[in-house]
Image (cartoon, rainbow, N blue to C red):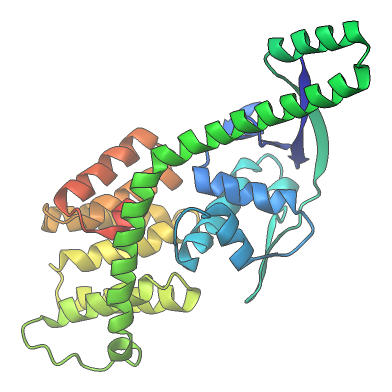
Length: 324
């Protein structure tokens, strides 16, 4: 039986284990999505150093194309998760973890310590047998070099196989999401010159509420602070223009669900999503909103999956449901 060692990161009571791929605090596992975990692993592994946005995106999403908004969303999720997981003392709950360097990237600023844990590997009979034969002939140094090379290569092949199996599982979904998301972004880019300064669309077939809603979605999809503020204003104007416009309630629900700093805002989002469903049960958007709230605020994975599936059943082309 041979053994190897792996680094486990510790910070503020958290244990980040790259081998078991989990985050724990005081023995309890903190749920994270795969990409959120990988983002945290890169930041913690480079603690104290600024990790450029492009480097993060190429490392975490090396097998697919995504927009910067996906990275922003992961950072938002990690900040909230670490903050919520730290609420044991007032000092811990205000501990900073991830610093934003505008237009550059992010830096993990909490104090991190590293410790090594042994990982047992399966016995390698072929190596042991070969070593015994070589020992009997006196070629000790040559055998040791060969056995180390063989063990290293076998371990590397085993790790590569695990990565390949994981990649195969998510590849189909990743390609579909990337294609739908790219199509959605092209549509938004094509309309950017029309809505950036709030000009009238001139489309007589669309109601005022629908036009305001579409503008709100444009800014919401930017996932920037300024964009989110503008989208809130537009969604509220749409509701004022037509109190029965269901999509506008859903858009406003997404804003409250996405709010990172006001912890009770997601409850307003839940109410607004339910209102949208009451007005139009055929809409996909409010079900995706509820799925987001179930996953990232209530950590109810079963309920979240149900809502996302419902959203996709209602509108398979709604990119946000696939993305979340």
